[in-house]
Amino acid sequence: MNYSLSTETKNVLNAIGENIFIADGNFDIVWINEYSERLIQRLSKYIPIKSAEDIIGKNISMFHQNVSKQRRILQGALPHETTINLFHELTASIVIKKFMNGDNEQGYMLTWKDVTDYETEKKEKEAEFRQKMGEYQKHLEEVASNLIPLSSTVGLFAMMPTPFGMDTDRFEEIGIRLIENAQKLNLKYLIVDVSKMTSIGMVTNVPMFKTLIDSMHMSGIKVVLSGVGPELARQLVHSSVQFDSTKSFGKLEQAVNYVNGIT
Image (cartoon, rainbow, N blue to C red; front, side, top):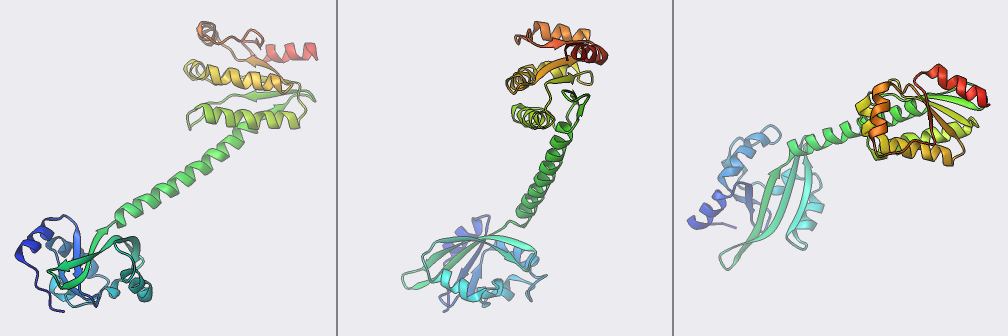
């Protein structure tokens, strides 16, 4: 089919900042807009075309591995939008619409967006996220396993700063794993040493820390704090959270002696 696009139509399509291909009823490419010429240069690495003129007359099936599937799409309900992988390296988001050039000539308009960089970045972020989640899960296991049995009923847990920061969900996950490990050991008392935590780190997480202690108590495990220095003690006193039911000591030795005295 011999297409003859009007100057007005060409100007409109050339003004659109996207790759636009016009194909006839046989799916042969009859025209591309000026913006597409940069895409053609990129495609020349994979298909035998060097310029816009070289692609005119080529069938769009050259871009598809599954030609029969492509024809079913084109002959089905339009518009149709899909994402395809080309030559195992390029990723394209394509919208296919019916195109009328005048009253009788009918063909197809393909709007092609090269999203290779976007898809590559997306995959890299997904891989990075999976790696971070793996590191985070490993960190949770390491934190929760940092529970040392001092006797058949007494355990020691050292609170350590986390490289992942601390929010409610993470604190709850650590708490759940810690309670599970303490119950497996049949502990009645747990000394929680906070000497490695900064005052800012502890005070910021006071409500979550209090929730952890209350959860321990409800699980039948009494919590005793050690490593509470003067600055941390002052900060905790001025916080709105009450620790009246929890014994605290400045040194680990004091906390151990207290627990041993009542067990």
